[in-house]
Length: 630
Ligand code: FEO
Ligand code: CA
Ligand code: CA
Image (cartoon, rainbow, N blue to C red):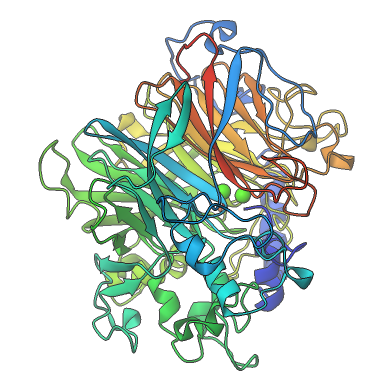
């Protein structure tokens, strides 16, 4: 998400206004200066400055760069359309408000639906997604992250909810949409009334599992057991397990809580997560008292997790996996280590927050039990050193001083601060290279880098993988676990790319050597490797196309070669959208991509055009020659 429902503030900005973060101290300036003295980039930059690392490039068996991409780069643009290279087709497969059952109403552009119609229709603002082959069927599971009030309530004065049904419509537009899909007459379509179709909403019953389940911090008036929670919301990126379940990640869960008494002060523990007496305009406390934090102060402790969903069984209870920690989860990249243990890499997307790794105690065996794999294990947080090395710091009662594992799993940010984790430039998606033990993470931007500490007061010095003060453009960091062992404490790292604008800047803001006037972009966010080892990069950034962003155009999707560093633009989204979420059909001949919040400031009518309400949608991209897309 690029901005909050309360335009023009971003989510991070809004959090900083309603719950002010600590000011920078003299000590922070000293730390920053010390890091700066080690040299501009502090650590290592992959292309052009790689020698700083004293390492070698990752060995690869890739063909020459010109052969690695099947397409010709397209120029940036500001059209209200999806643009792809010659030789490719784009179809819109499913949009916000499309009914999943034949008794549901078609989307009404005049009213933008009701709570009732929305509850059985595809949700809004599509983000992470995955397609599963289930028997002879194919099922799309997609996150519906949030709503923009000027769009969902655009039929009302000033884009504000006019009644409880409006608020509930917004609530029902959140969560997960699960829908069977199939090709019909050469185009992908949803299958209404499929037995596998399901909407998961903020009211769907879920089970709290893992170390924090049943802990006092998770008990509420409605659930004195602390083991059952209602629903999921602000589901951003995703992951998928080797056993075929979907992982949905709760990100900006805080913005839905408020207090009837605006002067109510939340605890420091809730403040660290940005909970305050004001919500971000969703108004849920008005229709559902559990979102009033003055009455139910433990309710926010029941959100901020990774949730596992079984798409094979539409009656299954989703499971919140507290062992994977509580923070503003972007996505969850699960890999099976050489010894069978399951390793999950995860980012906490807020300025100056951390990168995490979970390692299961048990091992994955195909066909074997999987229930405990994401409940029992160790969570660690990343520490990066300027010399291109790093280590994972375990979060245990001994290292954090916290009472037990349950507290660490609820107050995970505080645990990370306690061990001195590296404050990052907003960790977004993490993805694993299928050809080698190497992980990439998009650090989208951080205007507070070197300016302000994070929400917990940890300093944010310039250096290491966060090398630019007031970072407007973002970068992609990658790391390699020692000996290819994802459970190893040690790793080495470098930067795959520093985004920037070489037509405007001559300093570090021009970007790294693999950024030029033809492929430039800002704010990398969605990241996913395809089966060939091409890194797909989606952006959620400044689309003003002016000043420091002149020539960047609308948000876009690019392909990167992890071996050569080449980056090429593949797709440009419609006006005021972000491009986020991607997956492939089982035969790899279709790539599905999410277009989120087109027209968030009122300038788009995509995809229907004319005077139509802009609608977030999943698009299907194919090659005209029928060749593979990934
Ligand atoms: Fe929902 Fe960090 O993006
Ligand atoms: Ca983002
Ligand atoms: Ca994102």
